[in-house]
Length: 565
Image 1 (tube, rainbow, N blue to C red):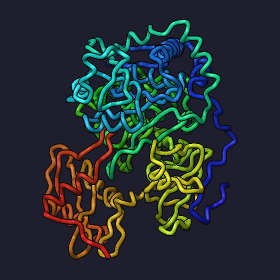
Image 2 (image 1 turned 180 degrees about the vertical axis):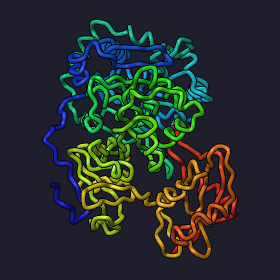
Image 3 (image 1 turned 90 degrees about the horizontal axis):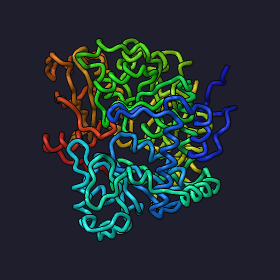
Image 4 (image 1 turned 90 degrees about the vertical axis):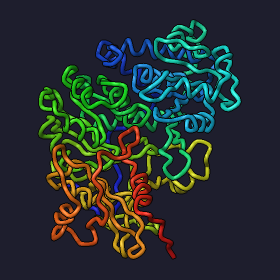
């Protein structure tokens, strides 16, 4: 029996060693074992590749990138929704020692300019468009020189480092190098060069840059290594008990760790199939993919599962093949978790917690965990990772006491690209990554995320964690989804505001919600401001942007920030 904790510190002791090799070498090892197994299924492109075919395309693209004159350590951006080119690029850049720079498909002109220039991308692989975004038009706005430049010879005033723009899809455009040409560009010389590069690569080399959301300033480029993300993907798959017989439906974006690490890398480390149902999240497409491809696992943030469960056609789908999956990205309402287990056949579904800077997962539930643990916590510490919960003086707190979650181990990023100052603010001299998340650890080592340091509401001296109020209000029979934020108040410093999305066909008044709260929760936890909404401001990964809710309410109520002593 595991000893009870007497302080909020855990470490993931494990008899399973870390993988000490690069992503490219590990992919080759996987292909050697499961060459004829399905590797990648992209339904909207009619792609169905075995591991052997996937490897062939990865190697061809790696040679093509070298033919452009790119060298190990050069940065290659990818600006695209989910597709086969994204997956191929992820592994081809890793094989060639290039650093893949994930660019959010929702970025507009100024954000694209910032990302490319911040890390000095020499090449950019991009789609022509996605939803309302005209990528080619935005690129031409930043680099009109592309119209007259020969492919590979771009010299743009606003994008000084960028030399080559590679366009996916069937329609060529002036100045853009067609992606398919890149697959045949490398010859014997590049094959020899690639064979020489791979033995020189080290697993601690940087291989990926992912930009944080930038809600409190310019986005930061978290720089991750082969070792970081390959091992995290492996242990995520271990927690789910993935094997070569699994087929994982990945409707989450690949530009984010959820797609490329929890999705792609968890699959290739176990010989499982990666299944992309659509370019971006579409609940109907996700369920159709699960049914048609007999997927055994389904991924999503809670809002995605809520959307799937709310589909009028939901009960018409045969989801009996599902066994497991991952909910991550934001706290999951307990009732949603229960419905996924009972109605979607995901009896072994896991909750994962982490952040981009830690590759990303630090905690994950297991199918060995009692159902109560799997619906109410984010599980226990991942192998080879340490976590402590600290107070404002950086002292470890007792069990069940809220504090900031800090993590240390193989998974912590190298740093923020080109930003030593912000790196030092996030990672202390002892190697602890300060996450900014408020959490508790119980005596058995299970973690519960209670909010963000910046989200915690202090009303009249009382600390209030919005997630607690959200979980409570989610129990109301008319509430489909809810988000709670704090807004300034001249008397109490802050007051609670709840945005509530009601279930289809229902109506409610603010007083009805408040009456539901009375006698059930403390008076100071009852939201003063209640608004009924059709939806919430979201990131492309499905995370609710609470700061935008707060800003909108402040404008609506004519409020300003309260000065503190």
